[in-house]
Length: 58
Image (cartoon, rainbow, N blue to C red; front, side, top):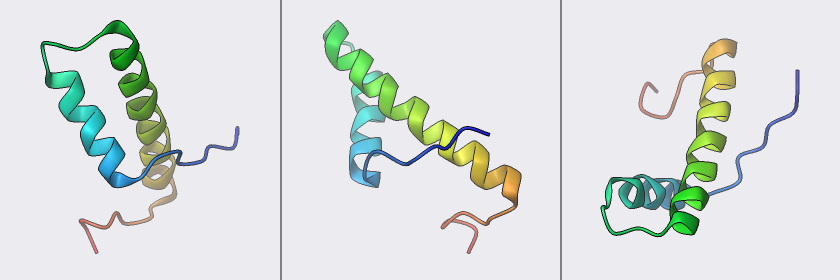
């Protein structure tokens, strides 16, 4: 399995989500937000597969 490392803080992840919901966003900003989202999803998938509870579950 490929090693995956969380690249951003929770704040940056939240901001990326808000940016993706915005209608006035440039292509570059959208791409950067998607990279953050994809990184978070990869980490979340690994944590879930390992059975590690998330902060919301603990």
